[in-house]
Length: 295
Image 1 (cartoon, helix red, strand yellow):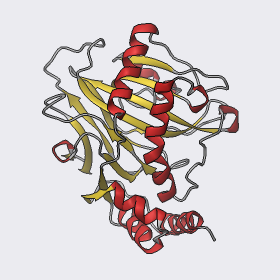
Image 2 (cartoon, helix red, strand yellow):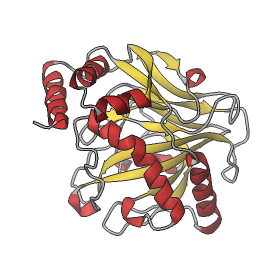
Image 3 (cartoon, one colour):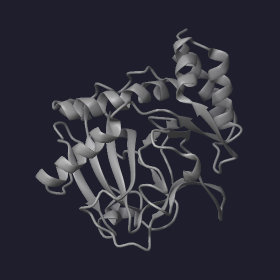
């Protein structure tokens, strides 16, 4: 049996025997190079121990050193190009969907499954034609393939899918703008990816002053991780842990034209809009009217 199948079997064993974790127990640090080596060397014992920590012990990990050289510049160049040459827009995930960007404000966010104030730039693999788009894809997958493997999948699962296949990979460059960019309490679907990951491409104290990524340790208790996160780090965890992004510099004026704020490269396996009753992430704050949960 291939190692990814053994890991999937172990995940299923834990998921069938125990309820999913809700609140984070502890947050530890792990070098991405250590995880990569364990997978490359097929260190089953190490990987199963890590999986057990994530699911049973409710641990999350700050994965250090996940970004390829120059990835931040690629992200900013793409975002600036889109802002300059394309209008903010929206397209559902049907075959042929283009890359696009959307500034999501307090009104638009009510159309989504989660309450978020952010500027998102969406990228699909079949559209990776320019040098910048190819560099973004290569930089993301250098990290993402190993996260997929840890979750019990082949490294390239979904990578070449199109929307009519049902599930698709989507890269999302996100700027949570200074002036109140945020993402409220939520949990992520585990249907297509058990392990959540994305690369943080900003540093609090340099790119912004207040707010940032948090876990809930209890219903009314949060732990903010940004003082431990460096540019190029990722946070990995089982998707049922309650988490979000506290408002970024809420006392400042929000500008969609600026690059100020918290930058993030998200990596998501989505049910496309070809899937009836597709599964999305779940808002836990009551901020979203359920009948609008379509985006």
